Image (cartoon, rainbow, N blue to C red):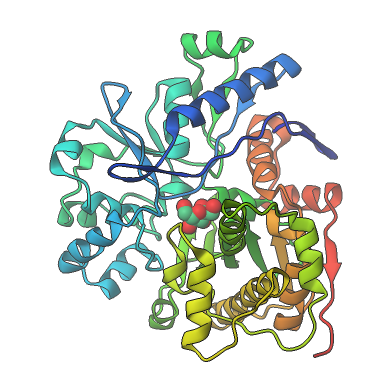
Length: 454
Ligand code: LFR
């Protein structure tokens, strides 16, 4: 995306979009980092060709995954968090720091793929060889500027940051034997990471003076920064591959109840806390579509969802939080098994199965909103649903129905808006997070879905 932002408007244009997903290698699931880098560089080159007045670049991606860098060179393709090697690391970490204590130290929900578990599954040789551990957006910033940093919102997903001080948790790092020198200097959203290197300037055809600016480099942090909240009694759902459901709070919620409910305290822009729960998200649907397409079907998603909306009669629901749905593979078989185990009928048509998936997501979303509200002791009267899921009217309507409150859908590009607004603010726009959100509300008015009577 590229954009021109002023006090009254955001003009945003999509420059490039490219596929990105897990690839199977002999040693497990990875990211095709060479292809990713090529697509990023081509997109940036195009952006500068389209608008030579661009002054700043901001970078975000999914969380937790990292590259190890030695002498400026990446040591192999980063692993994908859906690779199951990290489950080996879970036991190793818990043997040193039991789960309840780990929550007290990090504030994080247990997810088997958190960076700290991935690191525990690394070989000591690879860790010893490396100079820096760089989360994916920090790796891209390193390629562009030569400066190794750790942007704090994404660092908050590693399981190595103290959520209260927002500094590396030195004692924990030492106890777990993570080589301290791997963890770079932390930077805050809005800080300048640095100018482009001479070779980046040349490769991108960039004008003089362009800098890389830190943004909420965790995609969910940027999405939450751009939620057009108009009142405090509101929850958000950032819904794409994942559904991240929760509240923005002033402080982490580190209670026993938050631990028991497996809620997380990730770092937000401007020192806010993203108190939320990871729900499996539209991955359930996209993996199902992948299975159908692998069998030779061509799926028109819009049509499938329209048919799913027209399904009548009782719809079975399954637990969308079940960890069995995490890895890639035959999603249809896993959903069928989950339904059969609980004695529910397995839908026999594609439309009915799509309805069952979306209905199950809506149930999980509504439940996470209720839990977040209870745990943070804050009333919630409206839900903002941003990201790709906001284009799915069935999901928005069913979430409103199940939660018994209005859903305000959009913007779909909340993450991009969050990265652009934080850059614009750092480079002269000024303002508070609330004024940035007001700008989003004005430029991207959400679509309202009222709950229907049961
Ligand atoms: C969403 C997201 C989630 C994180 C998951 C894995 O894209 O960043 O916030 O838990 O991906 O990194």
